[in-house]
Length: 163
Image 1 (cartoon, rainbow, N blue to C red):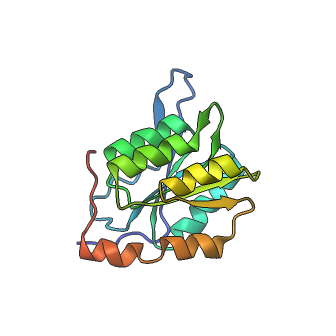
Image 2: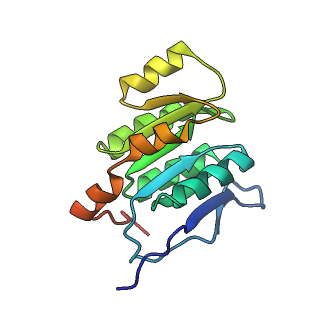
């Protein structure tokens, strides 16, 4: 078995055809990659790129999603160890992703972030066991919340639910 590629980032974007279908960008289909899978949902391209690269450096397999639909699809087809999502994803609420992740992946670590404080949304995030953070993100808090994912992965290898 080959060593997983360190720092590989999996990105997804909506197809340029405008038909709502997704197009893969450097989608890593290497089934030997046993790193914990983290779904990252952020509609700001610069923030998505920066956070994706930082997470990949943390020995995590990052599935970067620029839309709610992309993240929802990844949650339904992968065995996810963590979800990090912006609370505002254009017309959708990232808390819906958190609730879906909690249902599909009960042991997943959950992080919700926002550009603005909101006590109601923060309470909703905490109610499902998610960490609530305000931008700019304190990466040490994210690291602490995700700590142990690699060790847990080694104890119970995660694999793709479907390819």
